[in-house]
Image (cartoon, rainbow, N blue to C red; front, side, top):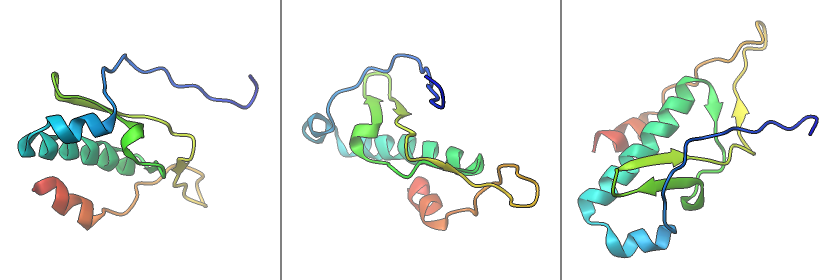
Length: 101
């Protein structure tokens, strides 16, 4: 379809988020958040703002302790108005503090 971009990702096993609230330990929840925030930090380094982060857009597999941020339909790329190139977003200190927990 013209004007549409599709991304193909590896298969990621996941369950509905509410299932994790009952199953995961505190350490598992910390790891879940760590993986999610690292994904957000990586996007910010590339100049990408996801703009729709919610449990349904983060696929997590506790067995492999891996996660995948999906659904970039609302995302934006920060662009330098002079060069037209993507720019790194300013470091978000709040995200850094949470990741360090």
